[in-house]
Image 1 (cartoon, helix red, strand yellow):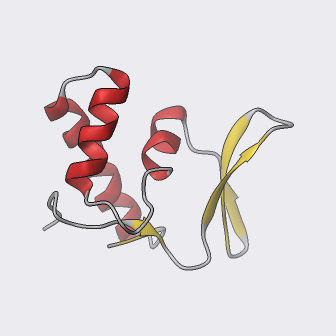
Image 2 (cartoon, one colour):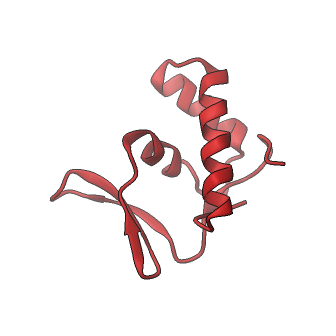
Image 3 (cartoon, helix red, strand yellow):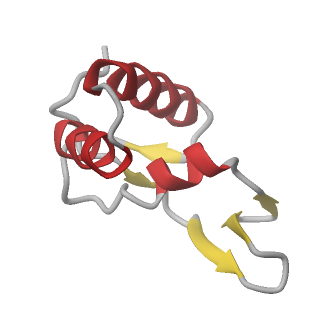
Length: 90
């Protein structure tokens, strides 16, 4: 079970970078790439392998002036999904 004490990072071989030509964030990985939506990109950029999910959630809630419980629900669900797909390591 994923909780807020987890420390996420992009899985080995994945990185997120800004594509200035297309004005969007892109996640690059071994033999694949995808364009996350703005919310997913904001979350993924926080996954540095040092911060817990609690810190990520607090930072995002403050940055976007959004309810913490709503941010927590979205962050935990997305993190669990991307972890199951091998894109995010915990």
